[in-house]
Image 1 (spheres, one colour):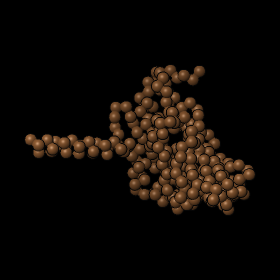
Image 2: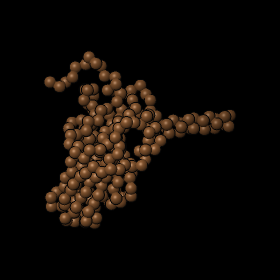
Image 3: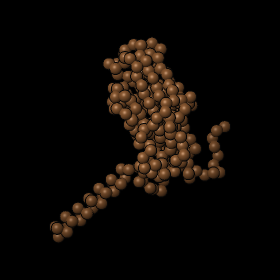
Image 4: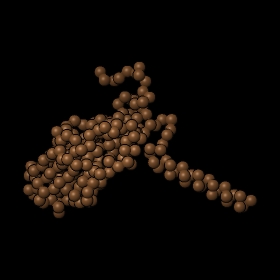
Length: 235
């Protein structure tokens, strides 16, 4: 009896462990009230869609479109990722956004990279990712989001201590409000850009930053199941 009881416990534990592993991957979650997908927010192909700024007593900043891309976005894995979420393979991907900072003073400097118009993300956003070439500096990258109530929230992404391209991903914390249960036609957040907080030890000379492929993983269940005859509260 003891042996049979022990075997039963092992089987139950194993099943629970496998289930937990499957649930850890958002793309594998299929329930009655969720529909997870990935959307391409911007490819940074045109620099005119982006604005850069920094305090005038800290330095001079400029931006430009540059030919280039992360080599990973030409791999079969990346193409399979696009196909999985229905992202057309015909989008332009030959250019990136280049940002150049020329420091005139050392200190706790900072600069921003923001879209000309906030980028609306439909559904309940789970994560946002972007490809970055940060030139191995100790600067901090933050993401600026506008929550359901229109308040700006800053979310830490990562330090830029790496060489070459790297895809940085940040999970959206629960403190960024994305919905009000009274409304189903207003859920979601807006992407308002990036803030780079510079390490004061490395605020000298010229600094270059490159950005490509801004994407979001979002749950669009409410958008797909919304009643077409429901009134919109926009008057």
